[in-house]
Image (tube, rainbow, N blue to C red; front, side, top):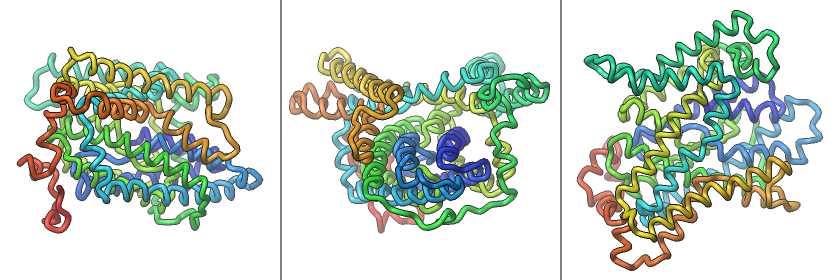
Length: 483
């Protein structure tokens, strides 16, 4: 969790005008809310061992709010931070309603029922592969720390379990803990020995273990509370832009939920349960807005990959882990020590976790007829457009400083630029449309797209194992039945 929880506030808080103290508090708040949301999701949402964390999709509209004209005339950095944070909170409060309404009303359930294995492949695959920018480019920022982490992870998780036979699966299950401890110690030795004394500032920030400013900025004990930055402010345009980003995060989370169900060895998640999970994701976004995380809520892709690496798909394990997240977020200094792990170490882990999610999406091809030209066209075209369209949008933005859609209304620009910058969103939009319009009523096509394999999972009651994996605790199914 620390990767996302540190990277997002580290990118946003300095632009908002905040210093190390504000950054440390936002990281603590994000970790605290993530712990609560994970508990809610595992008890009352999908009931899968899915960890809820921050969302990279929400970053773009948040930066747009930061750059809004009404904050640019503020000279005091701390006051600018507070005002920007309140604007972000207001936009997120409104944006959370789209996930809550689509999830709990059953509208999203009806959309997911039309999803076949064929259209799910690009969604899940690019939910993992689409985050390649966070992988090796992050490792290369301090290659002498990041590369040993990748090599050690491969040795511990893939080679040692077969070379050294022990009674219990120790090496693959604890490979993340072992390798982070070794490489973190190695990075500390490099820092202490003065290896980066004369290095460039950027190199020092990425490689040194004492440059994040989090340990000095974090209080010993800090309990985040709602509206700790003040009362939220609302702007209609910003709310519209954030609602669109919230919808994109909802689509991406749908793919990650399906991946979690597969790696947790559960049956395919029924659409009604998925809708319930999306509704609770919306409540999570609302909680984040109340507490002031400057970010929304989405299913953690890296933790979904962790399920595949460790083969631990236990709901109870994730719930206990959520308790630790809350504990470390309250005890600020302890959490800050862990958060000071150099970010290239996290980027190295992403190379493995995101690869697992991408591979999970590809595994659904086993249900499709790969000899069908229809299947090949939809698969190839959706993958290509899912990579090509966001590449154009992102390239244009990096060169021009704004997206291809550039009108006087910043909120309208974000409503178009944000969704088409998401690889998973564009890919599933293309695949879903083509799969449900080209020769849909043909019986042979139904088999080609693998639709018949998921027939018994389209309703909660048609598969006897749904009760085991997805029924609500405390007999709540009587009051909130799944259909």
